[in-house]
Amino acid sequence: MSVRIIDNTPLLIAKVKANGSLAIKRATDDVVRISRPITPKGATNFLRDNVKKQVLGLMGKIVWSVVYAQYQERGMRRDGSRKVRRYSTGGTGKAFAENSVREVTKNKSKYLKGLLK
Amino acid sequence: MNISKSFADFLETLLGATLGQDLFIGNAPSSNKVQDSIWWMVATGGSRITDAVTGESVKEYSIEVYRRARDYKTVYNDLQSLEVTLNCTECVELEGFDTIDIRASVLSIDNDLDDEDRKVGLLQSTIDVYEDCIDVS
Image (cartoon, rainbow over all chains, first blue to last red):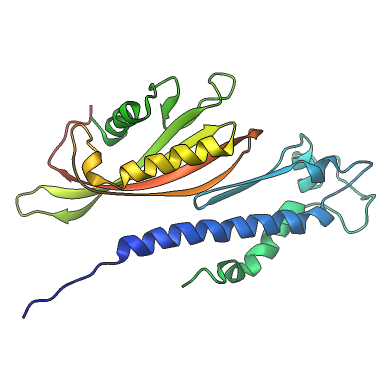
């Protein structure tokens, strides 16, 4: 008796890569959306408006491309000095990037919704 | 001859690119050193997936090819064209390697983080080659 083996592994791998990339794109879009209202805002929206995102394959990156972004994220200088004590816009504060990513990763399964077929 | 150099030579012929000018291995040079429209590739792998009793093996490599240009259409068309070629195993000849199978897929095209007016696209390929002991110099 002869048998025929069909190996769908390459198809599965290709599907995982394509759908995984889409899921990461959805997630990065949400990180940016969630971060906006909690990103510190002064007289302008400069920090909020200068966020860039990129998804290539299974790697997603989000960059706040403003010189003082890391200071606002940390809420202080790298050496611990100059702590931000008062935020002029209610609801904003430090760790806006970290908190947004944390919020998204809590619900990571929803970004795969509809893609696992 | 290692897989990176061999694949880069193949891309040079296929794309009409020049290694070191608009085709790079490993990463893209900083923007003030090269033009906007470039290719670069990153090769990983070398995993043995099949061993022959003679000591030879089939090895798998992953190669990512990135395309950067000012407009989306150029990036998309170039990557789709490359994908069609790479998914035809008979069309791929890598010097120093006996290619058994090659599979490629074009993934996302997105903004270049270093320049909002540029686009970057990615093609991922998996290459299975028949190998004995090779000189990687």
